[in-house]
Image (tube, rainbow, N blue to C red):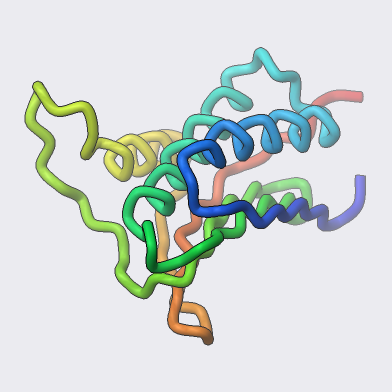
Length: 142
């Protein structure tokens, strides 16, 4: 495997893009040798779902598209980033038990912390932001 692999897709900031992003991630992970049914693949898809959902919900009308970027770095780390054109950083909101939403960033933080990673936000030169996580990656056995 190369020292660095990357897969990037730009999608419309629309609810249907969440499932498109999940399918894209499943395809990329399979190409990189991570079986679809594995716990690691499930965690990556869940993180992507939450980051993309957050971008779609909180930038509606403010950013027509977002970009999902997966980078396998030195076969040791997987970086997942979602870039949109809105400058506001994600915030952890209190979620009542009865609410259907408000838990996405808490889920991402919990999953990444459990894996030894973390959640970060980086401003982009055009005034937007990239919300990203870095996870440990173990190259699948050949």
